[in-house]
Amino acid sequence: MPGEKVLVVEDEEDIQELIRYNLAREAYNVTCVTCGEEGLKSAQSLSPDLIVLDLMLPGVDGLEVCRALKSNPETAPIPVVMVSAKGEESDVVVGLELGADDYVTKPFSPKILLSRIKAVLRRKTEGPVDKDGVIKIKNLTLHPGRHEFLVDNIKVDLTFTEFKILQTLAARPGWVFTRSQIVDAVRGDNYAVTDRSVDFQVVGLRRKLGDSAEFIQTVRGVGYRFQE
Ligand code: CA
Image 1 (cartoon, rainbow, N blue to C red):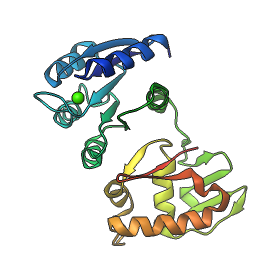
Image 2: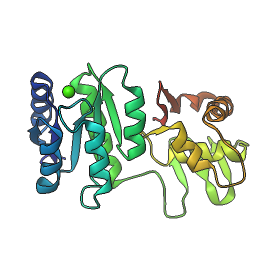
Image 3: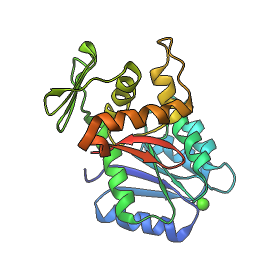
Image 4: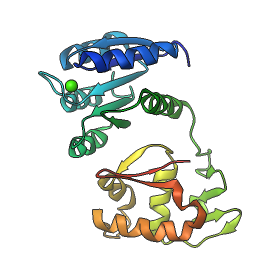
């Protein structure tokens, strides 16, 4: 939506300018700051609709900023899209687990960043889950109450864990889940799930999804996401 406020925390001038230019062109209201302290201050004073946060910042780094944002009830609801350099997957995982919404890896195309930002802002307002918890996306229907999964209206049998994983991912399309976030979502039903068994379960799940298997994307070094 035009006019939505985006706060950009990025110390590299050329990247900051690239982001500013492309967001402003789409009529976003952009504010740029160059360090973590200013980022935290502006997050409070501006209450932006979204924050683009570089992880590698002088002084208070991006992860610390993310942690501070997410532990303050005032700023916790503001979605965060992280900007990371190659090889910072472990930081990305930490950031996602702290509550960041998504990330892009440098060098990124403005088009990718924009589509991530738009998707994150859209997710704030709409989701595929109806009031009964039923998830409908394209040709897929998940009915948690009945533990029923349909592809093109044909019932497909999933194990309890496969069902839970699919439910977790599909409830928030586009959202990256780390393996341990998936483990947390599935656990609690006396089934011992580990990070590695998540991968194993996803293999089984994809096989059962057939042509729709491509909806479950592997996010290298990080986890999985459901992407239409
Ligand atoms: Ca930087």
